Amino acid sequence: MTGQEQRRTPIELDVAIMGAGFSGLYQLKMLRELGLRVKVFEAAGSLGGTWHWNCYPGARVDTPSNIYQYSDESLWRDWKFLDLYPSYKEIREYFEFVDKKWSLSKDIYLNTKITHAEFNQESNAWIISTDGTPAAIARFFVTCTGFASRPYIPNIPGLQDFKGKMHHTARWPQEGVKLEGKRVGVLGTGASGVQVIQEVGKIASHVTIFQRTPNTALPMRQKHFDDEEVRKFKEEFPARFELRGQTPSGFDMDVQHKRGTDVTEEERRQVYEKLWELGGFRFWLANFDDLIESEETNRSAYTFWRDKVRARVADPKMAEILAPTEPLHPFGVKRPSLEQNFYEVLNQPNIALVDLKTSPIKWVTPSTVVTTEGEYELDVLVLATGFDSITGGLTAVDIRGTDGQTFAEKWASCVRTHLGMASTCFPNLFFVFGPQGPSGFANGPTCAELQGNWVIDCIAFMVKNNLTRVEAKADAQDRWTDHLDVLFHKSLFPQAESWYNGANIPGKPRQILGYPGGFSSYLEICADSARRGYDGFTLS
Image 1: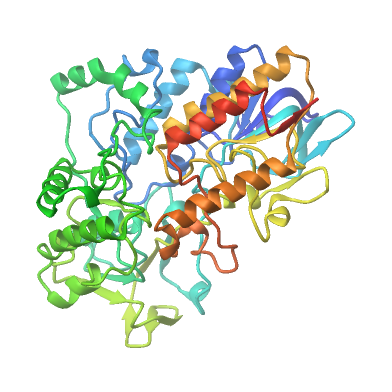
Image 2: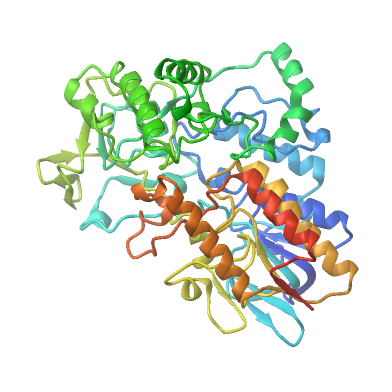
């Protein structure tokens, strides 16, 4: 359904869901099977959440396709990913397949943006408006906005005056942008920046890369599957899906369960070499279990990574900018990206790398980007500048709690939730893959299901027991926030400024925004709360 097909009078629902990505669609399927009246409201024109918006050149999943999907056997038995790391086009096809299998579209309003929501204390229900018009009255409100739904565009003088083509990677035109033979500037070398550069470097007349912090990119080891490989993978699927909830990352890979400081330097190198050759995030997520805690282990991993990268970069000066002799931050405390031929592309004569730490941008003119050391003529400017991550999807919407405050107002100085799924003064409202949960630290589809199951079970418990209101207790969310802070400062995470702690957004409070204690530990804590009658929540 589209927004234009909505009824003029608000529809009465048991559950309203914001967002039609992995989490929102899973909530719809499971809650609907409980016999509840459920609708999804999605601002985009198609399903897939971030995969509707991300269609820039080279946009690709950085999680192996074997677990970047739902665990429902009725889906994976009939679906076949062609690549180990699928492109955005293949992921879109997957969502179309899921839609048909689960019959989702009949309960989804596309092109329909939730603009306002407020809780009515007399009816214990959320009154939800879309595009400024009341659209639904819902007993429960589940927000599934993900950790990367609000693009960030830096405040650079003159940026709005640029007359060439200029797009953020997360708002790339669906019809594409002509880049062949163009002078292209790419601002940022995060995941989307790396992917864009790999593709545009092949076709642009010149590419200027504006880098603030080098990416600790890891080899993707992309692979195209044949039918026999797909058959063998599917034999392992049940065990692989089961393993997801038992690992710190929510992936089907576990850490080494030994400390790097307890083995010899040679043993460490053997582990690093094996993980490096296997590729993907293994060097990050399947490494020694003290990688993010021990300075010694972390430095040895960084040195290994640095030497591998520098061996692929021809220009020593560029190599020092991309992989500095001394690390700018510990390895893995900023999210690595996966690359296929990123460093080889940078060796091309049509590539220039501008180090914004030594030559910051002064301003943008209608045709150039001007730094303290030069001026760069451009036809196209790609803004690979990231997101107001984790909290941005909620703070951007006028959702008002019982005290009249929005999330933006409530969290102006500090985000506080209980279990990363609910917040005081916002009764009957849950978020999946949101603030202070596993967001950014765990596989997205894994969270959609395993964290999402907790929300589904809680709503089912409420319905079964004729309860009308559930709300996080203030002291419980204080303890949860303190718990995350303790975990954060026991690790090496505080040594880096990143979107993990809000440092990429000017004025955003500095605190850890996702749960850094491991996905399996997180699930145990949530399960314990449920066993105790939803400890930390007031049910009435």
